Image (tube, rainbow, N blue to C red):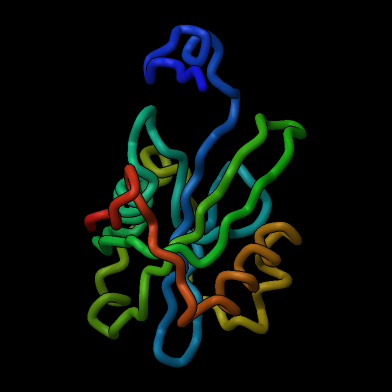
Length: 165
C-alpha cells in the first residue's frame, strides 16, 4: 500500500472551501439560555463565531465567547455538530460546545462591547419556550439538539488527544 507524505502538495493545493464555526450553549440554573443579538442577521444566536486559520475550535469558542460577552469559559465537550450546505454563504460546519451553567455572578459579568466593535446589539437570557420566536428555524433546531444532548457530551479531540481547555 502506497502512502502519501503528510505535506503532499496535491492535498494542500486547493483546500476545501468550508468555514468552521463555533457556538457555546450556556444556561442558568432555571434553564434560560444565553443568546446574542447580531446586527448582521435577523434573530438571535448562541454566542460564538468563526475559527481563524488553523485555530483549534475549542479555542475559537472560548475566544469568541469572551469577545462577545466578557465571559471566560474554557470548553472541551461538544453537544452538536451542524453542517450547512452552501447557500448565500460558503458551506459551513458549526460545532456547539457545552459552556455549562451560569451563576448569578456570571450573569452579572456579561458585558457586550459597543456595536461598532462587536457587531452585536446586545445579549439576553431567554426562556427556552421563547426560542422559536427569537432564533431562525435552523438556529432553533441546532439549539434544541444541543439542549437535548446535555449530559451526553462528546469530547473534542486534537490530534487524537483530549483537547486541553
